[in-house]
Length: 424
RNA sequence: GUGACUGUAGCUCAGCUGGUUAGAGCGUCGGUCUGUGGAACCGAAGGCCGCGGGUCCGAAUCCCGUCAGUCACCCCA
Image (cartoon, rainbow, N blue to C red):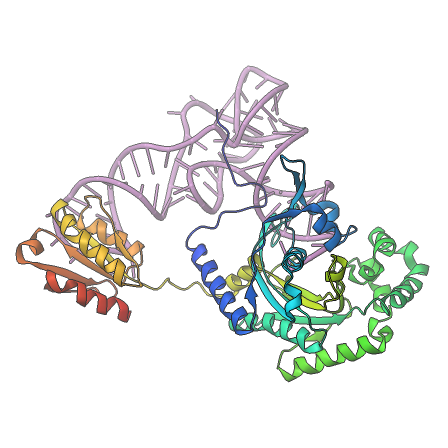
């Protein structure tokens, strides 16, 4: 008994009509990125494992437990990419793109993380992201943030929120970390096990805990803003000013801390509350040290990654179920002779039209053909049967208004082309 | 990795405390009906009741395991 074959855990098939919605979103993303002057980069779906260990950080959850790592036949350790930033930097270094000055790249495609699936979290998911290299200016942060926000506004996602924060740089972060530890140390015994673990590993994440036992101490914890060095403070203020200038609404959330090692200064997140526990649609920030850490020159950088599954979930939650619009034409041939006459016309129309031309080749009754046309959401049907053949005509039916007209078979091509292109 | 809930027809689900041949709606196919569609009526096809084991005279039903889904924790897009 052969076992039933299913998609691997945490993966899914994208079927019509959802696949059409994805295509639309993707083309919109390509256009948006282009208007901001970003060019697409595509990198391999797998990389040497070492790239992620060095790029994302050995201590990160991604590297410690979420990577799809395998050994190939040549004994190399490879990993399906769990994120795009490290591969993009690797490719830019490999092809010496940084020597060209400022570099604006975007990407769209799948990522892989070995996690327990839940709402908004899968083992294969898809991200759209941008990386702006070569500018340390706050304007670059704002450019990247407003690009992300532009996508959100284009779809009128009203419940999306932008939250920003600054997590300082290597000069001021150690001092803040020390201050945080000093604040929490006396209370750790009464706090969650989780909080104690974070105190060891990554004190900044203490601020992130949702455990009620920790709430009280988090509320009284010092904010990073008070510890920012002069340069970081100036940068953060400039980011806020520019965001107001370009009309992007935001709130400062001192509890936003990115999980990956390479972030510094600006961090931001766009969230929606229709997503359940995984509320973040988009996350990003500045990572001025990463290029150097991967063996390149000092190149400041800022970027974000946006989860396409989550974005689609928000869109679906917000969109009212609307009937698919009718498009194109169904060619209905009643009988073999009619099929022979209609097939060349269908081929010709497919060459000339942007709209779909459907045709079913079974011997069916007219009724059955019309049902199929309806299911295809065709706008028109052209019907050719023995009567029409005899009179040299063809019936053109408007499926929306349920009206027929007869026209000479020879002029069908031109008339149909005009009607279908006009849309209605 | 941890926890809770759920796996019965292509889809949505019913099947009570174990009791003979497994149920509905939608969908599909056919007919009423060679010729006008979001329809009606009639009929048909479609099920190792997720998989494996156990208890029992008897398991879709109870127990254990396993796989999968869902949601949450963790973490993040």
